[in-house]
Image 1: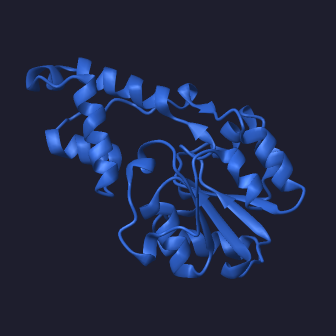
Image 2: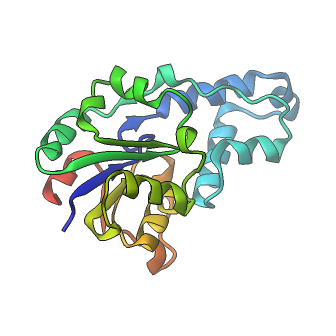
Length: 208
């Protein structure tokens, strides 16, 4: 039985579409991309391919085309999925909620800006702990903070490689929120097949 529900952030609670659209446009406008004849649509497609192939999204693109400068990720363009506050509010009445996310500095401040920080008891960011998903250590740190056994916890995220597979390997329950680039992935075996798949956050209320 689950006692703690851990959430990813990007494309799970937060819609990053505007971030990536802007990033692709800015990268495409740069001298290097212009010289290579790359459009924003081309770069978006490369990010999709990297996600499908379970590679780091932007680092793969930058490496492939040899960009010396990468367009910045703009957190100010992130938007909260509309159903997130209601879902978190409802689930927080029955479970402890936590975050396990690959994020840059300032995650707590961003969650506060979205008005959802108070729902989370345990927040584990890669920036703060020096470990990144899919590394086992970041999940172990989160479970330790929650004083929780793996079988008492669920991981809810958008990527099979970063969220589902490592959580399953530890014995956690898993829910794949099929949104964003991670939603283009497909399971390749038992190791990354989620216990449940949803297409929207509010479907979690039927599971927990």
